[in-house]
Amino acid sequence: MWRSHLLRQIVMIELPAFMDAQTLRESVTDAIRYWEPRRLVYNAVLAGIVLIYFGIYYPATKSFLSIDSVLFLFLLVVLANVAYCAAYPVDIFVSASSYRDQWQKHRWVVFAIGLLFAAIITRFFALGMFQSEATRIR
Image (tube, rainbow, N blue to C red; front, side, top):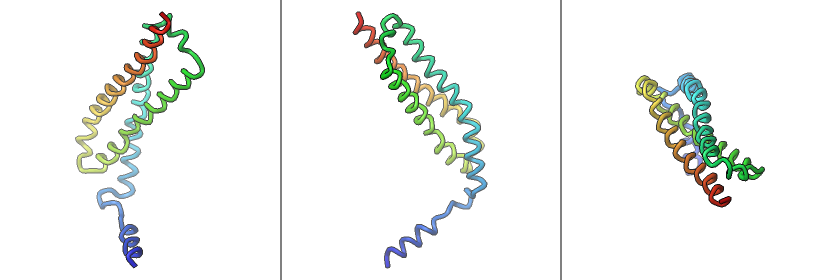
C-alpha cells in the first residue's frame, strides 16, 4: 500500500511552471550555442600548454612518444572534455530561472575560471610527464 502511495508521488513530480518543455528546450539550445564554440578554444589552449612543455623538454621528450603515451594523452583529452561538460547543467539550470539575463551577461566568467583551472591541471600533468622523462634520460 505504501508503495502505491510513493509511486503516485513520484509520478506527480513535474517540471515547475516556469520550466516548461519549451523553456527547457530553449535553455539547452542556448547552452549548446554558447559552450560548443568555446570548447575549441578550451582544447586549443590545453593542447598549446602540452605542446609548449613538450617543446621545452624536447630532446628528452622524443622518447616519450609511444603508443601507450599517446593513448594516455588521448584519455586525458577525453577526461578534460568530460570536465568541460560540467558547465552544461549549471547553464541550463540558471538559464531556466529568473536570473537568465544576468547569467547570459556573466557566464563568460565561468568559462574563464574553468579554463584557468583546466590550464593549471594540464600544466601539472605536462610537467609530470615531460620533466620526469627529461630527468630520466639525463
